Length: 555
Image (cartoon, rainbow, N blue to C red; front, side):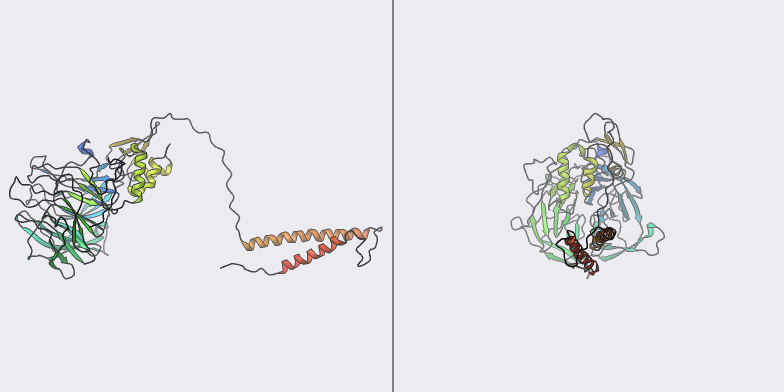
């Protein structure tokens, strides 16, 4: 059995007295917001995350005549759970159903988009590549169609895409153009262009056909991942109009020899193998692959073999383990993502095989790892100041900036200049009124406001405090300097002593009434002991001054 651990925040409508370990919870409940404030129900979209945000791009809806494609990009802050539709800058694709994306590197804010279909499935497919950058401060994305040389896949949708064995290398697998299904594998490689004249020419792109996999049935809506230990691509499920692929044997591609083969997997000791499926999702967490949902093949409209189960594939020994919990409802054509610390998020999907079947826009979450301390700290702030996490612009609060969250939004009183700079990143404008309400103006001039404190009486200016004098720098504890100071003090004492002796000698010569004292006779002279002690002190001090300084550094 796989040892699974997890945790779900108390603020997500969960009872603080319960643990909800590894359970699926819909943190938002019924959708009551306006559609413009929250992504609409959809299927065939894609999700991914950069650990600070969950992103949703594209998708299909049946709610309009002949269906419609969502040509939009949404972002949800994982700190505030506020959604925001981003402004699209540049050439953005229209074939945003059953397309594929892959991030340039894990959890990055740049990604590659390829293929997909429009509303006329099979008639409006694409084989274009797009390079897209995310700007959270501006709440925008910049999309650029890239020129790819070499052997490009034909227009397809329902294909898979994953990162390869080296940075900048990606694989495109399978798909369909509407009638025929293929199992072709193409490799897209990014290379630095030393002769670039502008930013758009910094990289060159080359695509090649790796294998056509003619010995295996064509398939679409499969999933794939790269096994960096065994140096193979692993393909999960998929299907065509005749069959759906199972999981007791799985196809792998050796990226070095470019040869595909079948490998046997090990079943769960109780539940066996997962049922065959397509239109499912997978996410990677370490050496575990987590698979959710999907649909089996059917020829009977009354039979809807949808799946709600969750399976975990161990890449170390190719074994399957059925997860103890299932999704609240069977779903396919959904999308999922997982953070670096193991928080899996699932959004959207369809609940029937008919085109008019209902879709959803619910967000499900489950922990498959231990949350970072950042998440615990943020949830502590949310529990202490719940009203401060409502209505905030998604570009202001980020999970990676917990200290900024506390300093800017939880500290009482007026903001300081440094806080103002944090808030006014990009085009996010900041306003503050007399009642200490803080307002944020986003990029498209819609105003979001939040009151961080209750209405309080605005007090007059504070009396200016008397400034303290600047602190003096501490004295340097230098042994050489200290010895020099001692020597100077000794010299001053000697000078005073010599001056005192000299004055006494002059007074003795001028005093005619002074009695002459015989040498060696000190019994009748009161100053004799003092003179001897003084002479002895002189000799010791002179010897001390003439003695060389020794370095006693213990090192």
